[in-house]
Image 1 (spheres, one colour):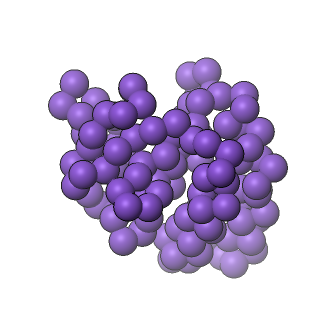
Image 2 (cartoon, rainbow, N blue to C red):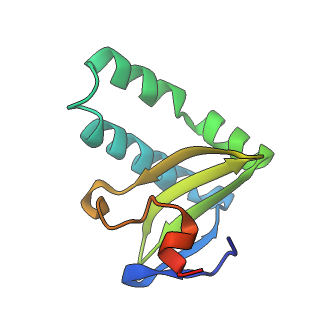
Image 3 (tube, rainbow, N blue to C red):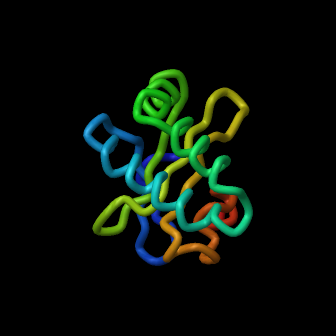
Length: 109
């Protein structure tokens, strides 16, 4: 996956930058709060919110390669650590548009 690939709906993929942290954290928290509530008890949701903290987001970005999906704002994020895909979150209003799928499905490659 190359930084700068254009996805459907005019969404751009680019590498995470330190100044993205606050927005990415808000996106992760909102996605967990909305998307997990039907599948998990509140205790599990609280755990996920604590686990996906700013320190862990930055640590994974430093150790691996974190990307963000951008329109006029950040609408998704994901991290690749070696062969492990971690922390894939997409704005709940954009769920079911294929944005969390494998990059080759979205980019036509």
